[in-house]
Image (cartoon, rainbow, N blue to C red):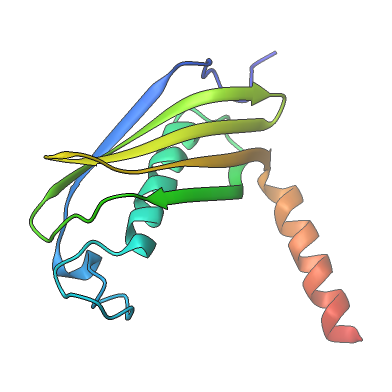
Length: 139
């Protein structure tokens, strides 16, 4: 039988992104200074790293869904910096995958967090969502 995902505890995956204006607090509408990396965008990048890590070798017909996310944005980073995001698989139980996620710029650690993803059949997820939606519309 083919496994849903061949990842093992301790595996890591990284991405890099140069911080552009679209990644800043001003663009995300949180004010502050126009050159700082937004926590919302940083969170997006951290989740995106885990998605790419888990979904790349995923068996056809299955998707991963985020079920929990936590981040501590420790240090500011400015536009023009290159941010590296590293996801490490720390726990795996049947369909559940837990990641430690860290973000660094050229000067050191800027954020750390936790992200849990669950693997499920795509058609099953869509069916549940549609039933839930249509049940609420008919009420």
